[in-house]
Length: 469
Image (tube, rainbow, N blue to C red; front, side):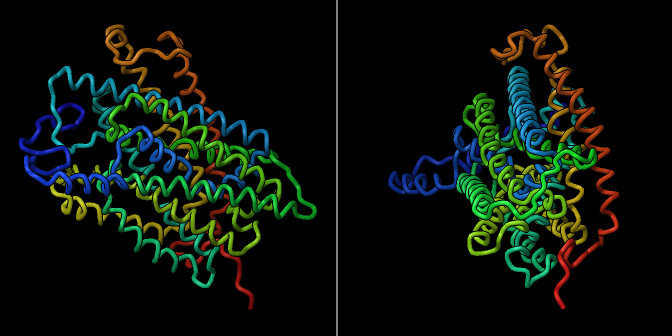
């Protein structure tokens, strides 16, 4: 096992799909298997785009209008573009660091076991040392763990809007039970259909929000105060930072691709898709509802109920289910490696994954007020794990002239020198520290204090309207 923690000896007689290689088999049978498996298996550039796009937006699609009400039209759109670009740059760096890590392993003559999946913290640890690995491990796993729990809470909340006859805790029981199915997805290479569903359902929900808001029109006396409160404003900034910080699963996506180097361009397409599904719908809902959104953070609550809304809720729930699978997968891999079953039979891996989902299920029941702490997650977990660590790791990795000369990737055309690349990283680091961690953290804590009186452990229906007597 190398310094990065990645095993370096490959088992013999194991094929790429985890079984033993065989020379016999029916050609027609193999063709049929390939045809059917192509529905869920894929490692192309398009598959990578599907997975990244499915994991980029998530539950924040229905809270983006709330964020727009916190910041106003101009600042909300500007922040979305800015953090989308910073997020795309972070992914670009991760691809660069991943290729550097793979290059160094190859030069050292190290060979991984079949089916071993390299992860974010292993790449950073292999390039920066033991402490880089530990810090990355802490922030990435903690962030993904909390994001997965928020997916469960958000799904239960959306189901409540579709059918309030059950309270949110009762919906959480149902959602939590279904969430155990996530343990059955082997890896991202077997998630083509799931990622496709995630993208399609996100698109449908976005279209519904746009059309419903425009059809409903503006409420009488609607007001658009915008950036009127500093706490609300920087809370909104932190929420947008979280929206475009979904690249904690980047390394696992790269591990499924035939050509990982192409992913830096894939993520640019993901960035444009994310803008397309978030900005028009959030602007339209804010235009329709105005400052009411400051008290009703879920867009469904300010739009007319009916069959179309029920359909939209169903689609966003399907998307959240796919997102839950995506964000739990790196945690599953960590637990498999800790238990020593990562490259063994799949049923052993499933047994290792079940307790992880059970713990998430418990926290979703116990702490239903995860929504209000989402901005804290963005300010600390996402800002550090997804924005700061790639930039800092890049500076450490290429601090020497020899490292820069031997880099498998050269500076891009838009930053043609190493000096410009370093300057860009320093700007990202300073901006994220001051605005993301500093001001965003202050706003998140202040917002938490404002709402803490509403919190209740194992609350049956957190922030539900009182039932008529």
